[in-house]
Image (cartoon, rainbow, N blue to C red; front, side, top):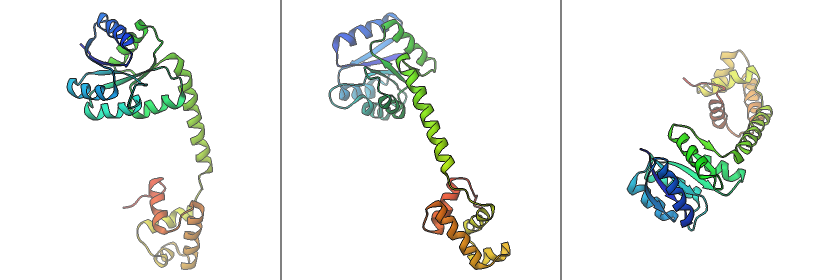
Length: 216
């Protein structure tokens, strides 16, 4: 039986939700009405799920998520909220919440959502699903634009950068590529200008991070 901790500062809502969950077969092992109490109870009870109101006195629900996962890593958190803000939704996902449910959802649907999470799913209320897709599409588009703007190194510049990454001097690189030392220095200067960097070391770190070259 799934063990739940219900956290909400409104006694009537908390009592109604607790009753609905118990009727559905869940084991509500504890309740809390503040952020601090929620963290303490989670550490003591180690519930499978924590149903957490976003807006409570003290810490915000999003801050509490991080504290809950620190004291009880095995507990999954479902945020109950009245906010339909895209920013709050993304912050909840980033904080590690497993669900983001608008509080005006009828109790039977809320219980079904919790059951889905118990089975390994992740739930976002229908009001927020469209916004999640919109935000995801915007992020993907932003990544495409960044990729399109990424400076392109020539084949020769990548060759030079590969040899720089291996620790060769400009003279040694020139000898290996059959070009002059000055030509190598010009290539390195062009690489730095394209990437907006200031040293060979910065260029090598950038190239390794972007998988343009390998070391070893």
